[in-house]
Length: 420
Image (cartoon, rainbow, N blue to C red):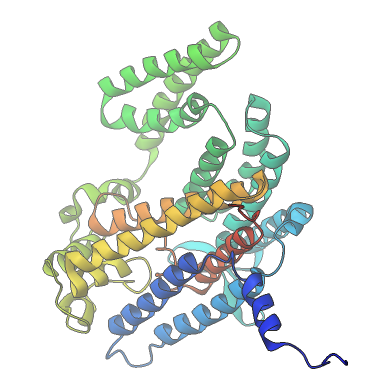
């Protein structure tokens, strides 16, 4: 009896289903849905503004990003382990190129024009840093100070290049990414506190002297309990915080009044209601006027009358608050919480440390950007120009976040299969 040579459609279908069975569809749909919702909000913001088509470009970038995620999910992410230094070098070369070929936007020279396209290398540098730190900490876990300093050595180069652009917000994002990944790589939490302690000393010395004294003593105690060579490292830690406090006071005195206002105006935006405080005042009015249920799509007065500058980029959350109210804002925050939850789950179930660390690096990047962006929108953080992931308009930011999602989906797709 001859067997049929025709292909079995059920067998082919089963093979396709098996190839995608570990793909995290819940995370994918959350992010695609959030991105498309953002496109609707950008269209509402630009309703009636002739010649504005950023909302259409947002949907185009979202479509390209979605396609890249589906493609990247089928490639094994482990190849990044062999190419991480090349990716790191390319990112730094692009950051250096900004100083020679960069385009200045809003006082910061952090854009690069390549072949008619304008890109922001600092956005892609965040993902490159995550990949390189994951490779390094995969080989040398942060259980000793040598590995911690090695990780900071990798971070310091792009951090300085971004800070010199100047782009304070992105440079702080590099710090948040590094600290989050070091914690996941078994670094002593006391070491991480000591690393950021000089920055805290600068702030406390300037704003509240007694708190700075208590903080410095506390850092000495942590150094005594966690660092080797207790006597020497404790004295060094206390000295660093003393010097940082004095240095912060000196630098504060050197700053010009308008530079001080940039850092503190969020505490009292009414001090300059038509200048530096205008963004925040209008944003808070928009969010407050939305009340519980919001005014409805295309019906927000602050949004439709263009009272909030740069609303389609850094202040898109204010449009959500006005047109969808407290309920809409909470739902957006819930979606971000679910995204972070899925990232933690994939990190916890990854088959090795490299994939797990990449997920945590992306998690740290997302959490930092969400907290800072929404914080500056409602007036509890300085305005730093940090975009809201997958929502703020910006091709470089959106594509970077989708590339990050593609890597995460690859990590999820190639996890070890669970056995009952």
